[in-house]
Structures are given as C-alpha cells and as structure tokens.
Image (cartoon, rainbow, N blue to C red; front, top):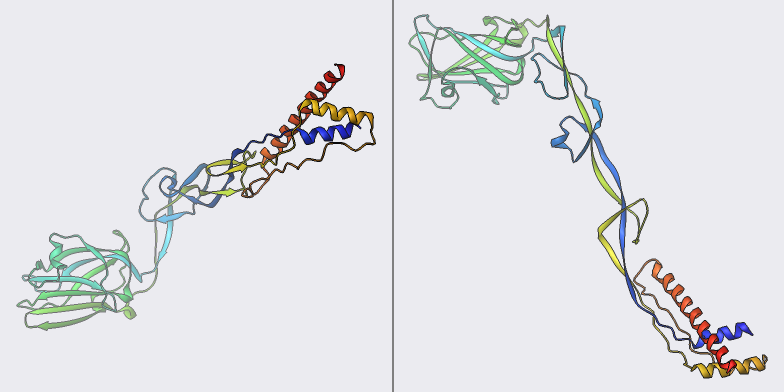
Length: 350
C-alpha cells in the first residue's frame, strides 16, 4: 500500500529542471626527449641539466688549447712519428738569380694537380700585390729573401704545385729554394732543390714558373721526435627537449596531470520536461482516503506522462552534472512527498 502511495506521489509532483554548463580541459604530462650532451648548453640547448654531465673524448694538439670553463687541459711529453708526406706551411728562402740582381714577382700562387687554388696566408708586406691577378702590380725581391706561407689545412706533397709569375730579368732566373714545415720549429727536410720538377713558360717579358716536388726522389722516412703535446677534454652537460603527452578526452579535474588552460570544451547538460497532471492537496487527500478504504481497488489516478531527461550528445563522457541533477531531483521528490503526507494527515485530523 505504501509503495503504491509513494509511486502516486512521484507521478503528481512537478519537476523543475535547470540547464548548466561546465568547462572541461585537456590534461597532460611532461616527457623528456632528444636527450644528448653538449659543452655549450646555454647557446645550444632548449633545456639542460648541469647536475647530469659526462666528459668528452680527449683531443690532442701541438699548440696549447684555449682555456675555458669546464675544460680539462693536460700537458704531456710524447714521442711522435709524423709522415713527411704532409706539411702545414712552407718558407721560400731564395730566388736563384745573380746575387747583384733582383726579380719582379707579379703573382705567387699554390694549386693542386687539377690546378685548383689552395687557400693560404702569406706574411709579407704588400702581399695583396701577389694575389690580385694583375700583371701591372709586383713586388721586387733580392736573391736572398724570406716569404713565410701557412695553409688552412694539411697539404699532401704529392698533390701540390707552386706557381710564380714574374717579369723576365736581364739575367737568368733558375727557380727557388723553399722548405716544407710541419710546425714553425719542425722542418720536413725531405728533399733538395735538385729534386724539384721545374717548368718555365715565357710570353715576351712575362714568364710563369711551375715548381713541383719529385715525390719519387723524396726522403720518405717518418719523422720521430719528442715534444710537448697537449690533450684536453670538455665537460658535456645533459641537453634535452620537453614534449607534452596528452591524456585522451577532456576532464574537469585529473590528479597527477597538468591542466592545459588553452585547450578546453564547454559541456552543456539540458533536461526537457514533459508536463504532469497537477492536483490540489485536497484532491490528493481524497485519493489517499479512497486508497486506504479499499487496497484492492484500482487507483483513481491515471498514470502521468513520464519526464524524460535528454543530455546533449556533443559530450563524449557522462558529465558529473548529470548525477548531481538526478540527486537533486530525488531530494525534491522526497521533500515534496513529505509535505504532501503531512498535509494529508492534517486533513484527516480535521
């Protein structure tokens, strides 16, 4: 009997439904990737950790390395074996002319066997006159002279030629004397002037001299010597990028993850009400009296239309608001039922 009454009360109670909006966000965690180690992390890394570091391999140098932060430099005595085939610089020390004469050099150049220019630096006054590719500019040299030349990279004796353009002198010009050098202090001493292959071509007063070392007659045994060698290594720090790993879906709150304030969606819950038949308190009391008198008699209340809650199908997950709304409706129904029963009791007492 009580269950039938409660069901009847639920049917006649009006339901008030509100539409609400919530904001749900994307959530993510941070992952490190592209992890490697760099010495200059301030300029080369997006993120770095100086608590995490390793040492680079050792590098060796004949010259003292540049000191800088986090570089370890050691000086050691070492015996080196160096091939005479390669050199880093040379020095022209004599032009083979009469000691009373001089010679006007318009161009001094160095090429490989394919006649491609080799980059070099020449340390003499007005050296640009020898590299401007002009026959109108020149430098005058005596029999005994000094022209130091250094190269950007190590040069192979077998792939090297000296090109000299000059104004033909009144007397003879039979070539040059020069020395190949490994460093400023170490000469290769691998050949003599008569080991050179010299070709000369003249067009009226302008001549070109080509000098090439005869490698087959060159002294090829390695140079062995003791010297001070520097070795150094750098401290390399952890360098990395950061990547966001997103959790699928949207959530209002999610423990253990970081909220992305720029990625969100608005979740809207809508409830559509179908009206129910309304009765006054007196009518309800009359219905209850009839029901009490005869439990087997069918209720005079006709079943009402059902109230249907419809949720916006744009959301992917069931919103917490849905459950909150159901709970509120239940509370409203309970309170309404209580008030109706109370009014019924008052009517009976009257």
